[in-house]
Amino acid sequence: MRVLRFIPIWAFTLLCLMEDSSCADDSSVVNPCCYFPCENGGVCVRFGSDGYECDCTRTGYYGKNCSIPDFWIRIQLLVKPSTDTTHFFLTHFQWLWDFVNNTFLRGKIMKLMLTLRTHLIPTPPTYNSKYNYLSWESYYNLTFYTRLLPPIPEDCPLPMGTKGKAVLPDPKLISQHFLKRTKFRPEPQGTNVMFGFMAQHFTHMFFRTDHILGAIYTKALGHGVDAGNIYGDNLERQHLLRLRKDGKMKYKVLNGEMYPPTVLDAPVKMYYPKHVPDEHRLAIGHEHFGLVPGLCMYATLWLREHNRICDILKAEHPTWDDEQLFQTSRLIIIGEIIHIIIEEYVQQLSGYNLKLLFDPTLLFNEQFQYTNRIAMEFVQLYHWHQLMPDTFLIDGDEIPLGEFLYNTTILTHYGIEKLVDSFSRQHAGQIGGGHNSPAQLLYVAELSLNDSREGRIQSFNQYRKKFELKPYSSFHEFTDDEEMAEELEELYGDIDALEFFPGIMLEKTRPNSIFGESMMEMGAPFSLKGLMGNAICSPQYWKPSTFGGETGFNIVKTATLKKLVCNNTKWCPYVSYHVPRNQEEAEPRKPSTEL
Ligand code: HEM
Ligand SMILES: *[C@@H]1O[C@H](CO)[C@@H](O)[C@H](O)[C@H]1NC(C)=O
Ligand SMILES: *[C@@H]1O[C@H](CO)[C@@H](O)[C@H](O)[C@H]1NC(C)=O
Ligand SMILES: *[C@@H]1O[C@H](CO)[C@@H](O)[C@H](O)[C@H]1NC(C)=O
Ligand SMILES: *[C@@H]1O[C@H](CO)[C@@H](O)[C@H](O)[C@H]1NC(C)=O
Ligand SMILES: *[C@@H]1O[C@H](CO)[C@@H](O)[C@H](O)[C@H]1NC(C)=O
Ligand SMILES: CC(=O)N[C@H]1CO[C@H](CO)[C@@H](O)[C@@H]1O
Image (cartoon, rainbow, N blue to C red; front, top):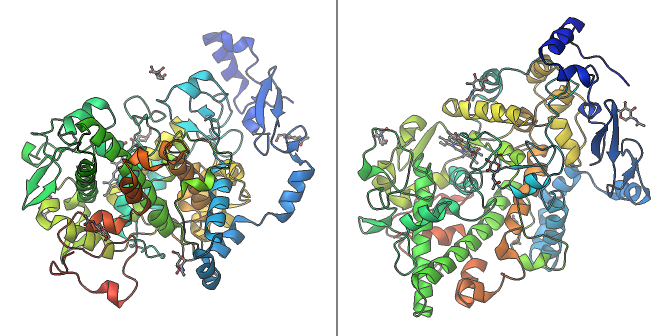
């Protein structure tokens, strides 16, 4: 099959004159893989100049395009409920879940969820933004984010392959017209700002795009939950942040409480605007965490928790040196993070009535590999700036977002208790559906869209298929917002050409939900694979001795957000990822309710 490009012949002649190599391999032939002909995970390989083969090995499908299901897949397709059905089930029937929560069924269903979700993530990782075929370089070089789907081939006739318009919409237009907040829309599941800052603090340990090397590279070589945001992502930085005594991290005491040191005491590179003097430059594991007081708050909490654990370990192991106390505390901290993320953070996000369970032993008899590689698609979909309100309400004061940024005095002025209390009471914004991103953060969305083009990320519908979801057949099916549907159609020309980033952000939300089907069904597999694929969850590591004995193991197994806060503060504020649900929770807290 020969299809001419939409470029006049004279242009080719000109190209041939300029660069004679392109004349030799008949460049008027469209790379057949630009049509993405291989269905169901089949791999497209070009043969000759206009031929291709789909490798359907172990997909369960066969035929030229891997589109014909074999017997077992047919049966599975018949019995498999749709993701919307499963979601409805998990978010309704409270009485049923009240029963399940308290029986062995809780573990069974959790195990099923973990295996079904994580099998969607390939291990070992496959492609990256430079290699749209398997390669040793792609497997071995950790500087790349991995990719679930290979990049769109460079030589396709159109930016998205063979569909849509010749020019993609201006990123500024997408962000200003579709993402920009018109009126603050609170998140309907009750998610709060405390959750928002956790999202930012947690994810930035493994999302560290290296914009100097390029959008397809990462600075976080740990590719998962390594607590590099607390300890620094390299040994030199870690050593500058460590006290070198009893396993502890350096700290500063203010008003009798522990805070991060300043760059005067821990001379690490931190990003602050020029006007911030060194005495106010907090030194934190992550060089950008001076950005918002919410991040400094979490940095302070984890710092206090680390040093608290060092004391506990030292009491039980007086012979241990600084290094062993430090390393063991770090593993405990990693365990606490994973525990809190699964049982509280993902719980809040999911809206499920099933009480989620963090228990690594659930996977011990399953085929599961304890390794993880961060994917560029995961970075893209996690741009949840819509969570941020335009104004923060702290202890009766209203602080606009602009005044909040790099404002290092807010942390110590209010103290951890009041910040936690205020952030836990304030609604976060709804992520999905569009028109809800704070104006100050729109350029980050633009940057993300630019990045996705640099990485030649495939269309939203291609990812729908990859995650076993039905591709949308029209913009009107994609969103209920008529005006948006028409405008997007105008800009992209074809639903199959809609880019991944606007797709994931603008898709219609599920009823009373934080975002749409795709964000949930694509985000959860990446997230759960990253959490459970951690070394500490493996049979080799998941045992008391790893954490210094039963005491440390129990700290990991019973970690909660509330303990993280209240074991490290003078009084216990209202602390949750959910705004107060009842009168009791809504009651103001005072220093007198000291723990
Ligand atoms: C006031 C709050 C926030 C500000 C000022 C802010 C600002 C920024 C900026 C400037 C970048 C670009 C960094 C770069 O140049 O690579 C960025 C990236 C990003 N932000 Fe935010 N952000 C905020 C809140 C959040 C929240 C709540 C989330 C939720 C998860 C989030 C998720 C991300 C992600 C995933 C990236 C991409 C990271 C990367 O590629 O390395 N941000 N943000
Ligand atoms: C395979 O896919 C190509 C491109 O989408 C299409 O033109 C062709 O008809 C398909 N062939 C079969 C046998 O399904
Ligand atoms: C089961 O867990 C869900 C989610 O945490 C919760 O809404 C529900 O009340 C729980 N039921 C019981 C009996 O714990
Ligand atoms: C990984 O790839 C980058 C970009 O191609 C290169 O600069 C770097 O040296 C590679 N790293 C290793 C360890 O090969
Ligand atoms: C920091 O926040 C405080 C309290 O809202 C405000 O008075 C101050 O002007 C802010 N500082 C900067 C540099 O924005
Ligand atoms: C995105 O790319 C456009 C076009 O190349 C450029 O003008 C714009 O400054 C970029 N935006 C950001 C935020 O980097
Ligand atoms: C040392 C300390 O205060 N530990 C407490 C941590 O929090 C839990 C639950 O609130 C308490 O039971 C511990 O005593």
